[in-house]
Image (cartoon, rainbow, N blue to C red; front, top):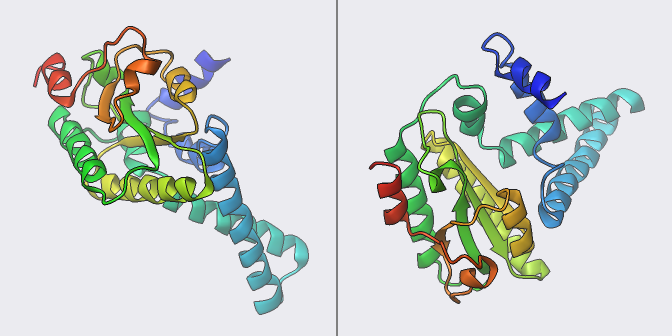
Length: 228
């Protein structure tokens, strides 16, 4: 079934369906617990706000107010929390990117992480995917996992960084998939147990505690692997 779905969505004539499926699902199913709670809460809170606005401000029926409220809230969630160039470049393949642009974005993320006045909310931050295998191409995206420390304040800081980086990447027209992970185990399983992460931030030098093969890479090493 997945192969049939991938064939349909990968077809140039049906690739626009990715817009609808991405709007509908918004990565919620595969998100870790805190990212899932954040996205669902975002939609629910704004659903209530839009519902009240339509039902009280415009005297629309309850059913239509609920429907319009959901559509508006879910769309707002999509605009705030989606990176559209992951869609246009990586999934729909309407546009292309370059290896240099992808690496420049990762260097910028790394610099912002390191220059933050307080980055103690992060356990560590890594990148996975084709970039670790030397298989970047013009339709690649970059996957970044923020492994946060427990606590509500740390979650808020992670969300702010997560949203900001997605919007910066959109402005730069770079496909960036960034995830908030509650544990190292989640980011490892999300990467299909890839053993050689690119380390963007590890201020406590603990990445090797979770990757026993100790094959972690720097961005400079990954650049050579990808022929840059």
